[in-house]
Length: 522
Ligand SMILES: [Zn+2]
Ligand SMILES: [Zn+2]
Image 1 (cartoon, protein in one colour):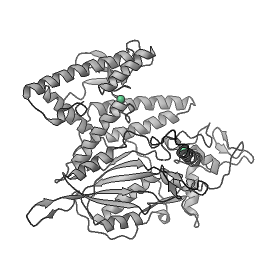
Image 2 (cartoon, rainbow, N blue to C red):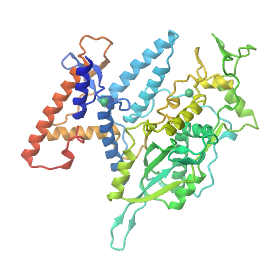
Image 3 (cartoon, rainbow, N blue to C red):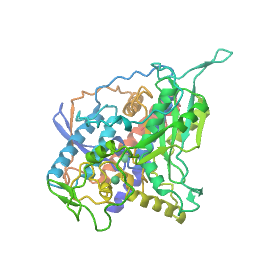
Image 4 (tube, rainbow, N blue to C red):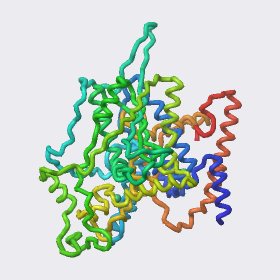
């Protein structure tokens, strides 16, 4: 009944109810009852539906506001995992089992691998540190020659603090200034209205590689920033698309530095990508490496085994003349703005930082603007054969076996996020928050709001026994799972009851707390 479902979706959207809930079986060990519970999509992986995306945006804004002008060191204490985290871990274990089974059966595991990476990120974002399986990948020992040099920059003595300096005015008032910094990538050719003036000479190859490695450059910038600042600088940043479709970065920084120093740091920051060369096509068209069980990929004409990923890196290490595959730097456009706590300026920056969180990089594309769509298509084409990671199947094109090579790989068919038109090379997180930004993880911000709601409802938020519930995925075709339309309407009914209750409470208290408005407290 597609019609009923559309209507239910529309109603759910109006009430801010998740329209793509994930059903889960939950055993209450206190009562022995199994029940199907809908978890909002926004609670787990990146929000997929508009109501969850909106809700997450408000959470992010709260998180950003809270950390920016902290005047006391945040206390970072690992917490007992909460229910959401436990669910994520168990779900991850289940996906891992599926993945291993698929792998053993010789099936493609790309999607499941991607899901696992996403889940690990979510688990970390939910406030648990490290890898769930407690397994850290062995780090390669790169020859010292390949180490990234720290650029020549002034250095202050490190103090053990995450707070910036304060300034006291003549009337004794203490100011805590912070920064809002915008960093962009270099020019790849002249653009007008987001479109290259001369597409033929626009450097798409460089634009593609810069987008792929952008997050590494941001990491380097933060490292250098901390060195120069002399304290443990904290940041809340958002990666957003520019009109020309290159990613750029807005960053709220706690504390302040002279503008000239920020510009100096941006200018001196670079990242070298020490990957094998990928400029000469070795295998293309129908002339592609062939897989041999127990051996790996072979040259189709000579039968020679292609170097594995590790062998290729070893070769790179001993080659005195080797150059990095790519060196990425910021462009000359660096915007630095001083911001004071509690000012309209600060508020505007917070809104700005969360503006694009609900959109994908390519969302700004106007479907009627042919020139811009052509531009996006050319960039996607440049990304098609560009290796996105050590495991990318595109390495076969350049004569190297991808890391973890398996049968069925072919250049141009990597399913990594970075190649997809909606990502345009940047597959990293859209929000980057340093560990000591605020006292709270995003999960704790959610918990805050829940506590507030329960208090408003006159209930206490008793901590639940962490071992009370057991979660399981709902198997496909489970007869106990109601149709989506029905589940959505149930959630809406619940939300309506809750709203009515809130309205009554507010009327009774005569309380006009603005935070009680719908949309924020959901
Ligand atoms: Zn949702
Ligand atoms: Zn790839």
